[in-house]
Length: 315
Image 1: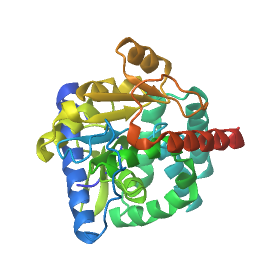
Image 2: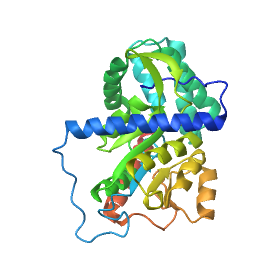
Image 3: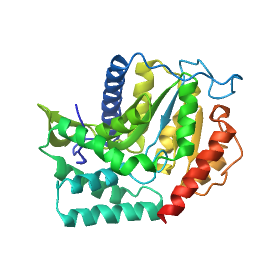
Image 4: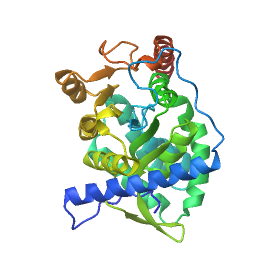
């Protein structure tokens, strides 16, 4: 199965769609991870710090980390950046670019995921890529990452992900973005793999039909749950990171939830439950609690400063 469609399925309950989307995302993520391992088995993980940090726990093979993508790992939404890249390659007309530009501008101003705007973007993506080959979009996705996404990674969040990798833990992206796009980003960042929206393809060509529903909200939690079961993980020892209140179901699954660049609803929820908070948009600490020691004070401070400078240049 491959994914790059955003058509909402009918005649299924919301719960059933979420479970189906989650299980499909987990299957696709494990497959891409295994392929990456076999292709690059000689690559070694960086060593742990001389003094073992309290968290992440070095050598805990039953722990892993799950990172939301949009506005958590990367500034803006992956699907909008992808749309810009497709327009440059003449996949669609200027009026469609105007729609993508408006959606991206709204996302930057609001800083949260609005279901209506996100659904509109998904419908646009579906109409654009239907009939194209999966391999073609994967190749183009590599180019688009370099052009529009690479310089939008939050250094602070990247440092947190690296802390888990340095501790010998697997790190997964969990996003509503197409699984192909998410997998490219995960590979470029040196992460284990990605859980993303999965849609069907026939003979390597996109059909425009989703498997389940977009990996959003409860579907993300189902994907993490399915992957944890398949990988033998203990969710109580895992961590999850997100900016959006839509991901509270995923964050609530793990023993170490983090609110990164949180929207107002997630910030309020996180404070009420004493979850860890970190905001790289302003350079301030959202809460002086629970930042992984393995990330290092210097790395976090440097990452924050870089993120602030990037933000100011774009304003």
